[in-house]
Image (cartoon, rainbow, N blue to C red; front, side):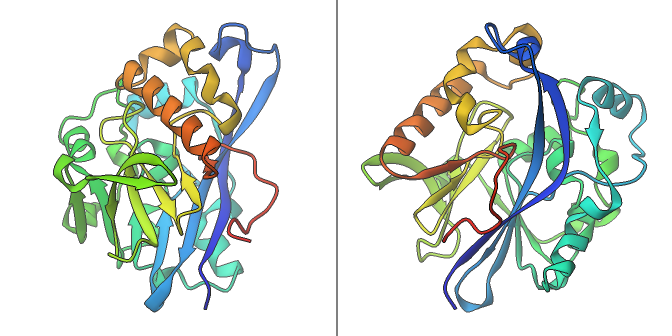
Length: 265
């Protein structure tokens, strides 16, 4: 079977672009929460992020503050496990879950995959150990078993420089065959990562609010800038992604509105 990469929308939020970016349009834009399923060789099935959690959040005052700042729109049918099942995919067949970072719109569906191996970074583990409001970590969204889940924890040494299409990326080859390269994309959150799939599509997580907004990272207003873990690294990552795009690699950000489900056609 040839490789497949499918896109699912698991909730969304909306913001006025002028409130986010200096010079931004005075219009409200919807930002879907994207989840991406890779079907690879030897039965490997990798989920990149898990979307928002439907239903009530048991996350206390931090969760209330988050929802006020970034109000989510999420319905029961947005649940990633339900969408996979509707697509004929047994959620228990997911072998790996790669987490770009640990914000609520990326970890809400973790509880649906207790049998998967979770791929995280040392930076993400640091954030879990000392969650703060500024880091956007809501541990109440994580299932009780997550601390004991099977994990691959990547640190800096696991991201050697690899040249792809003339672009230098720091990446960890998840399966050793080049089909799924976990890529270091620092800036937005401590330990933020993306994934280069089949050498063609780079899932960029929250390296930018959208593919078309990569060039606007320098124009973030005070509050959106303040919530970035490292704004200078965030800008460098955006520039790297623009170079990768110019080299022919398709860049897909987690909040991009995509018209098609299949991304490797």
